[in-house]
Image (cartoon, rainbow over all chains, first blue to last red; front, side, top):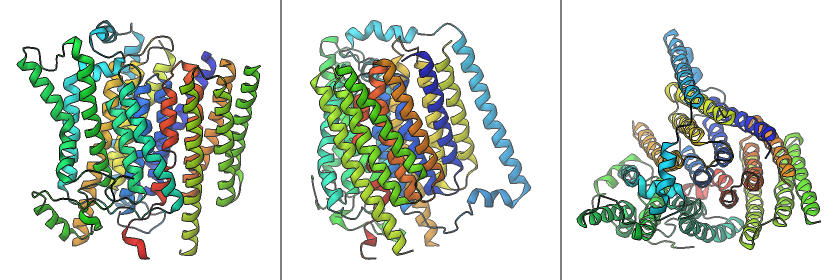
Length: 348
Length: 94
Length: 95
Length: 87
């Protein structure tokens, strides 16, 4: 692509991104804000592709276009309705007193100052010689990492600690969600047209996620992208009105949720016992170990994201999660006893 | 020769995209816009993928292009149907 | 200095500041969650701009790995925040 | 071919801009969703062209995921919760 048209492309893309972000934040009602945010996610996948980050673009496509939009819309669906078109809360707040108007100005100025300082620092960094010692370190050691995709090498080998902790963060988040009570009520069973679509989409998405997991060793892809794609399959099935979307019963589900962290830790500790550093794979086994850990991590990530979309524990026997908070409190007191969920509809 | 054909297909595809989005912008009401949009989705992307398929380096790449087109076709039909039904329901029970 | 790198990095700063401002000022919980996501987007853009080294050179994989996990963590944090907001609304509906 | 691809990308960018105007203008949520649908399809087209332009083969996989999930937004938008089955 010649430099002029590339630059024109950059400017137009960034203008649309900033415009959408602004419109989404400033829009008078929450529903519009969410729709604009979904459009923003689509443009971001383009921007990441443009910045030569296809690994990131894959994850953004699966999450930005599928999961997070569906998640926000589901949250919107059950918000307490304040039917007052035009009367935004921000405006109401602003009108209440002079102090709040001043707070607004101060916060705006501080945010602008932060952006200014950050931009100034970045400009200085970019003006200097490129700092690529890390890049050189990665490419020098890529040969012993067991994979040839540098991003996968960083995630699963060179900075395995980070990824292990990230999986632990995901697990913590989902445990928090589960502790808050039963999930959202599901969706009505889909009509024939959407049902037919869901029936072909779900297997295709599962296939694509397996492909991404496999290809991640030498090309863009890997556990995170594959997990997000697999979770998208679950979201599609859930939207089509399947209640349990083929998730295993409670006990097995917990096993799947913790598989990523568990296997990662097990590998690290057994390496430690064998006299190697924690997560310091022997180069000969590195490729195989990474694939095993990634497979487990993919399943955990997918289960985590699907449960995050459902927003809580699965309903037992297809009883729609009743809304009154009393049932929710009961549910929390009984949460300690693992219950078997009704296998209302499994698979597709 | 192949280059000429694929260039023509790509240009035509972009033309349909533009026609679709101009329609989406200019047409007066939702159902007419829905009609304009399906043109962009189906024909624009169809011609574009056909043009790119002639240039594809291997079979897997060409198959992915075909799959992309089919997926968008199915998605656009489904979502047009769902959005139209949704809008109609809103109209009948305000 | 690469123009594209600077362009994306400065846009990232702008988006981050816009998101932060709304996250601090807006009354609606859902909007705050959206705003924090927008803010994260700005940070991701800055990181990927730092990694970018022109169309010919391969970009730095370390920020890519950071952003990749960041996206997944952000969506689960969003889900947790929404679940908390839902619980909060349910408690208020009680009274 | 590369010149043509660049022009095609810019053409699609124009189409995307027009779609954005509809997203911002509305007036109804259904209109906006329709425009989001168009932006998604345009994004798929742009990724397919950017792949060869930037020498990034993997962008076709990104386009594939976007295409497979193209309907999810509209579905989540129109989906009715279970309780309101009989209203």
